[in-house]
Length: 619
Ligand SMILES: [Zn+2]
Ligand SMILES: [Zn+2]
Image (cartoon, rainbow, N blue to C red; front, side):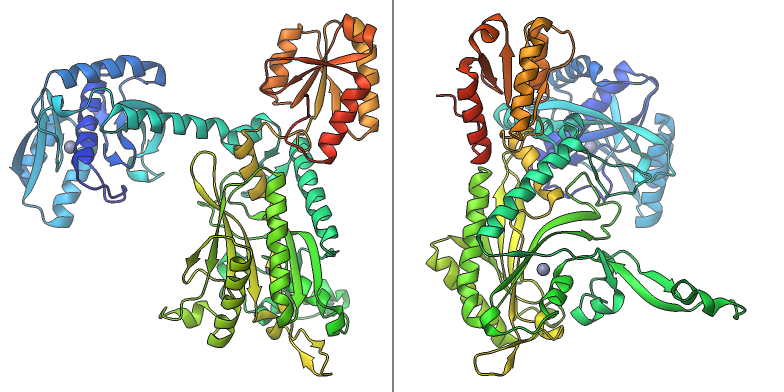
């Protein structure tokens, strides 16, 4: 039983096994929940599911019993027998089965496709309207290569006007090794999921009264944002960038000049229309009552046009170039409400943006410097597994003239420069034909995540078109006006994307410099709180985020709570520590403890934070 919207899966052995297992599951469910009725039960990319209206609820606690029943059925070697009935007989058969949802679907199939027959499969006592194919007998199903996964609610045929059914998901493969590998990768990804950890660690929240895709950063998440921002500011300062600050919105007409409108309209929030009376209070007195739109504003979907205007705010000479303008700029994109999710697909995001304005001759050195900054930044974060793609235009693309600025010479020239940059830096790369931005080629940085996903985190783009459209000029050494090139870059991407990525990368256990709480003091008994509080004050004076563990809990409980919050450094304080002026360090994920003179530990800690080391050096 499958409907067309279900992912197309090859009808190979694996498909047959998954399909057959769906029948086995349904048979087992009907045994433990007699009187339940059936929805769809198709194979999916890693297993199968089946939808039910259950006579009595079922939870994951019933899985062991259900699995046992399924294994028993498999052992019986029930044969899958096909029977084709005329449309009329088929429908009356479904009537006998007492399956109203199958009846609805069967009748629709006959009507839509002009079917003359309906096919049924029987295995043992279980009968299902189904097209197959299946394995020959249930004995052909590997007994140790499937596992029930979860129970979820699902509307009949995916329509929220319909009844809510209970969907049971299962993994299924051809051998146990593949199943085990799949299950452990899934569990690892679940444990690292940024939505789960984002909630548990107090990093962000989404509130319906604020709006979909508009995350609120909680105190712990704000610390992580600030630390990333500090790092970016330092790297940019050293590389000769200037910081600017620009508003979140602009007149709509600006985006017509840049070329974002009308093409990009779907991705932007709708216009905010300023009416005549709102602009000029007197004009509406005794007027016709009809208020005209005087100006429309848009929330900005990118920072570039604002930065371009900063560039053109003053006359520029070739001697001023390159000019590098940086801003952690807030932008808004109207993501489809179905696509909005966690921190990864949002409608409001803050971007580690900068635009470098330079002459043609400077492009290469600027690009090299940007790539060096990317490597340094990712090195600090311990993200060494990235690969690089050079994204070009596609001159053969029939729609190329809509997707890309029509200037073949400029494309060839700028692609060549980027190729030279990558070759001279000995950076391996792949080519993405037709993946360029509309205004020029780009270098995309893609990471393999810890759980094996590929993720595009960041890009560097060369823009040979928009500065011209916006009339940006500088006076060259020849005394003539020229249009600068623009490099768009954002090594830390957006806070939203980067923090989501880092939560999953570190599984929430951030290195000391990034951690919301860097040090927590745990006293063996309340009588040592004074000493511990002195240490907290001393560390906070050094801008270290230190706190005393609250509560009268026992030490083991305090240690467990520190671990749950993934605090990188726990300092245990007891009688000996107070007497000797020491602290005993227990680092996150380590069992062994080590005692330091307080001054020594303080030095190591401050040094690790300043140098952004992965952890405090305890050798
Ligand atoms: Zn089937
Ligand atoms: Zn830009």
